Amino acid sequence: MKNQFRPGLILLFLISTLTTTAQVPLLSSNPSASAVIFLDFDGHTVNGTSWNYSGPIYCAASGLNNTQITEAFNRVAEDYRPFNVNITTDSTKYLAAPVARRMRVIITVTSEWYGSAGGVAFVYSFTWGDDTPCFVFSALLNYNTKYISEAAAHEAGHTLGLFHQATYNTSCVKTSDYNYGQGTGEIGWAPIMGAGYYQNLTLWNNGPNPYGCNNLQSDLSIITTGNGFTYRTDDHASTFAGATNVPFSNNQFNISGIVEQNTDQDMLKFTQPAAGRFQLTAVPYNVGNGNAGSDLDLQVTLFNSSQTQLNIFNPGTLLNSVIDTVLNPGVYYLRVEGKGNIYAPNYASLGSFALQGNWSTSTLPLRRLELHGQLSGDRHQLSWIIDADELVAQQILEVSTDGRNFSPVTQSDISARAFEYRPNISGTVQYRLNVTFDNGHQYYSNIVTMRKTGTTPGPKLISNLISASSFEVSSNGVYDYSVVDFNGKTLLHGKLANGSNIISSTNLPGGMYVVRFTNGTGQWLEKLVRQ
Image 1 (tube, one colour):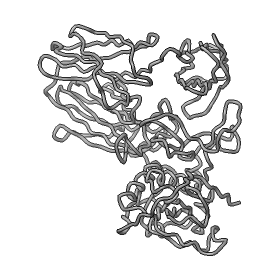
Image 2 (cartoon, rainbow, N blue to C red; image 1 turned 90 degrees about the vertical axis):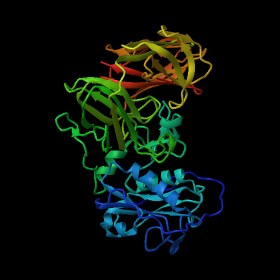
Image 3 (cartoon, helix red, strand yellow; image 1 turned 180 degrees about the vertical axis):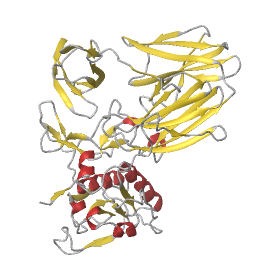
Image 4 (tube, rainbow, N blue to C red; image 1 turned 45 degrees about the vertical axis):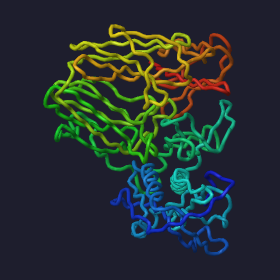
């Protein structure tokens, strides 16, 4: 049976049609792949397909200019980067592909034949072999490149056999056919097969579809098992012995890669020729500021030549990572992988990345610069350790609400190693210590993330580590709770009463989980480890 869906954002207004003034740029994400998803921006006549119950459909062009087309292509290509499929704007690539391994996504202003929708597709049609296309209606999406890209990836997903990612409450009652995700900012997340228009980080997901809260849909498994293609071949080994060697050239190296699966760990090896400062910038593929269009929340781990872990780098509110440290000469390893965050599950943090490493010999003999933070009621308590041969000339504690732009909180006396205050900003904030030494060298500490609790904090775990058959939650009111694994699956759920609550964890396997508390107006997240 051919199942027809009408997913997408429905907008109630139109704007004047733009015109494409030049030939569509010919772009391909994976030219050697035999399977093809063709983004058709320049118009097409549809005839002889399951859509043609009233004769031919004459689709005008998308109304996008070449800059918009290129951005839309790049966004969709990154969504499908882990797979051995070619996202292309080149019709010759589509026509050369096996007929049962190709899909035409028509991005068009022509929608009156169908109705008001962001797009439409037949589920499973990728393998039908009769050139039945799917559609994205650019005018109804207000020619918004982000929206059009989300719709294109979403509709193509339907043709690959995916239904919607839906949401249910703790009583297993469906609350929406579309999962709109959660969070804000750079790491705000939603499923591609939900409604990703309003979130930056849109990923494939393992969650319930609209046909029942226990009907879990593993997007990755469905895409790679029923359409004639699977994941790309791994580009970097996951072992120390097979680590890709990255040589310095003029004190710098550059390398790129792809995290193809959620078990993928890319190992890289570099040799620092002399003692000095090592800096690494690790950036996921993006199309603009704030890592727009990225599908990968990067985590980088640094090891020494003995394969001993030195540190893990994964800023909580950013998708990119940075390293800034002092290293002795020798061999070092970097492990690059995708991770979830407080909003996004660990299931499908996948995609491409680029690393740039730099080292310099003019270094400060700094052994340790470490910032710590904790909450005391509604006060933030910060303390730090500085271990260096040079004398501290200036130290400034800085704060950020977006993880990028920092401003001073206080300039402490050079002998101070702690600071406490009540912040006048709400939500999650990040702190770092900016230290200048008497030889003029300046360094930043690690970043500490803290949330202002205000006068009405949410529920709290008595302990984040449990080894018994239950765990305790202290609550200041009535809340819903759920325990979710890093694949996004809810394992426990229920309600908290005011006071102490004992929650059974007998059937909870060992591992790390996120505990989510909600009361209709706020949300609190904590990590829980079951031994």
